[in-house]
Length: 395
Picture 1 (cartoon, helix red, strand yellow):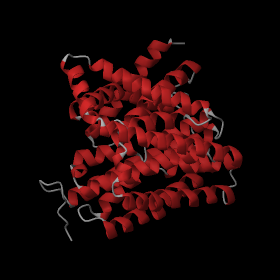
Picture 2 (tube, one colour; picture 1 turned 180 degrees about the horizontal axis):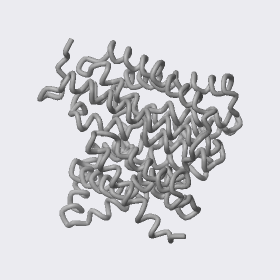
Picture 3 (tube, one colour; picture 1 turned 90 degrees about the vertical axis):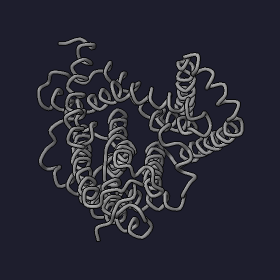
């Protein structure tokens, strides 16, 4: 039996090592971290087993990851190009999710909680993978790249809202929805207030940065995220949404380029070097080798993602995108990763899904993350971007 610190050390070494190997082949690093957990966990070697201490650390890591996702998304993503953002979310996420849920319930006869939780975790695209692909390719600088990122961010936000609502009584859902709407409205006005006072706020933050007190900025953001998370837990909604939404108001327009850059770099360094590999490797520990009888169900989930979600994203992009090819959009929207695994992990901890279907969701996510990243790379090589970030279409 190895102690907690040694477990963390081993998890990080293997997760970061495999992540770097995957990164060298332009594949998602989180997949390497998940595989590290599978290799070290009961499914393969049994060197490290899930524990209450590791679960607590996983919750802390999840808070920092969701806060960073919110900061990188920013509220502007939802307000700009709302038509396209909503269109992508409906066609590439909502429709496949509904089909998966219905099939899980009536074809594979899964219990309601398990059917919806598994379908939700597999059907949701991942903003972490989408943002990495867009940044690496230079497409983030294009208007269409911003639309794609907005569509993924909208899908993720809706997925979390669905997740905290579908298992509750209608009356509770109504109360939760009203509380969530109140919080979002308050957050909107706070965002407007910060923008109206941005000159004063930016001046103060610049002074703080110049005297090398960036830790104060970082502490304020963490405290704000914790306060929102506690509020969400108090009203019966998962802290994940609180961390995500509080991060949305932290953007360049409200706090200035310098302070925003410091915050973004700080969160990226902490998360990429510690919390992200740790969270996803701990998630991998929970994976088991599922029975062959569940293989048709996993193939069903992948097939729906590719046939319905992929086709819808392809056609929507073909109609409305000017600078990004439909195949490239398919590669971005097909990529699964952090958000789906987070939902599956929370569902497992709450008892919504068994370890078997958690493992099905994780394996399906890994397969699609690898496959669609390769699809994206293929279409980017076929239609390389110019110096302006706009791909050259080859027919």
